[in-house]
Length: 198
Image (cartoon, rainbow, N blue to C red):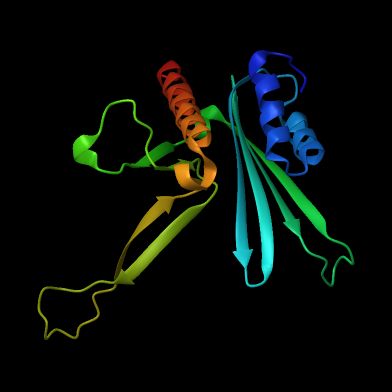
């Protein structure tokens, strides 16, 4: 990475610790970050089982003073377009001011015994910045069960650009904690940007 601060070194170490094509992932993230200092990060590796194939995917989220950077790397088996296995890496850079929502959903076991500061067993981090919107429609109806008139449709639009799920059982407590730390840093950055724009 261009900067040699503690946070940047931690990001590089986290990418290397993931063991998922670290040179490829680090180079893509480094190119996206450029000369900016890293203020917070999250590295999440996910392994999925698809029929008789194992697929791996890594997501790296980086927060700088002005941007939110998302990097995805996926591996693919040989197919008709490539005789050898290959990986695809993409990065997206979003100005912090464009982030419209940061949603943190926590799953806590035995909520009646919850002690503040205890890690949740699962966290889902959803971030929206307007690049992807989901529209869920369903037929509208009235209260009359015998009515067969066409009432059109009703629905909702949801910004759902990125959704990341981590769990203590699958990813370990350190990843759950890092997800909460990153979510708080991103929330604070978007709040600071919103107040300075007024």
